[in-house]
Length: 310
Image (cartoon, rainbow, N blue to C red; front, side):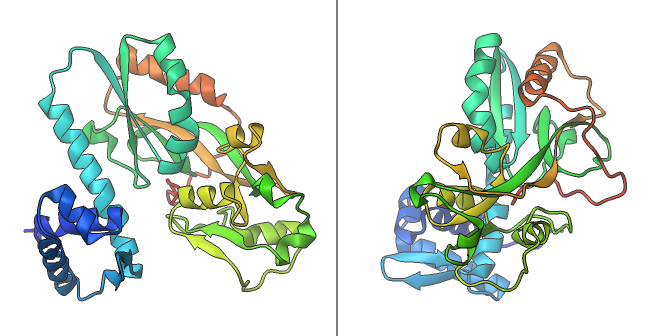
């Protein structure tokens, strides 16, 4: 039998973490701020850890809270998606696509209008999570996963291998490699450690520059927040040129200098146990056309999955 804290405590924590406020969490859950505080105290007693740094007019997640929050956020999102699926009669064809938060925000979401114009009879439901969901449970028809594979029990095809380079906001002006010591380096934590992750340390090695512990780094737990910091001109970030192609083309970001280093590969993944219907095949074909499927994309067969951006 699972030994878990109460659902009320988990809901209170997730809402408070999302809002950064006990008061706003209380408004959402229709309880008092005192009740929220009590539930979080119970959760902290259960874990033996402090989950929030209580500050004036706001609360800030501790390291333990930062680790717990995305797990609960994605879990509650999955609950909501499944309950909506069960509770609504399906009168139209629907395709559920799951992918990472960053890929959803910066690549897929801006393009879905094109799918709707081609296939107005099909509804898309988009699920974003940095944790790979179980496609065998029918929570999603298709997943776009980022990593090196393999994906046991799945039909997976490589779409493209992306590339990483230093990018920054044009607000910072022309940036040269020599300016690296004067600018904050924006970084994010990868969900899975892998020696071939396109990290600043690996980029410095490719550039033939010495790497050492650097001052002025901005390290985020989420890739999307690192992208937002770069867009805001907070420093220079090592980010995917393919993921941010639209931002670069629009001039919101610029590639500062080289070298360019390889990232991992985006894979189109579906359950091997389910035969896709015509509506799912249409979505698969559209995704292939949008991502210009590369049959030459490499895949290392015996490595652990590194399936999501953080």
